Length: 264
Image: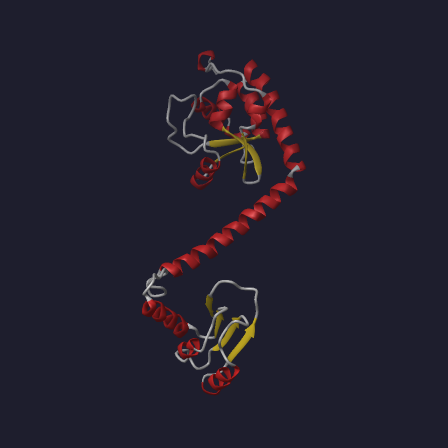
């Protein structure tokens, strides 16, 4: 390769080189544009050298990223841009990446003093990165598991929020003074939608709830958790069960808010 193809760049420290190593497809790799900077070449000429010696670069030495892989890489590392080299040319194609073996092979293909000298530093950076990953493998595995769990929770939250936003499920979520009938109507709608079970938590319940529960489907079980302050009588419960079974009432002081939960 001609001497005038070299690009003037400042030398990077070992720590800076380590920051250019990414894990893709389970391999530690370096982007062609970053290799070009380290070897003082343009990205275009680095890739030309690879294509002229393609037999020396099998897939475990060098491979091209997919659109998804490159998009994920840019998402994870906000500073990653789409420049092909030192900022002069915008990248038109998906980048190639080099594994540790590919870096070593590339230095032999380029055959210049800078490439040979820099490749030694790159090899050291790969070794240090490999040691770091081995020492912290369990931590990374735990973080990955936490990310998966968070994603699952996000999906569940999204499902709940989507249901809440549907007009057919809830017409209004906040009630102001004087909107007694509106609140009553919403509660009746919720009770009617239950197919298996209704759980009501209310410390100040009275027999008015029983009138609402007459609207439930015949096979739906009702469980009421209330406090000793409630005004519901055992006789009322007994009479209700004769006509609209099944109703169970339990006393507890563990709750301070009011809830209606249907079908678990």
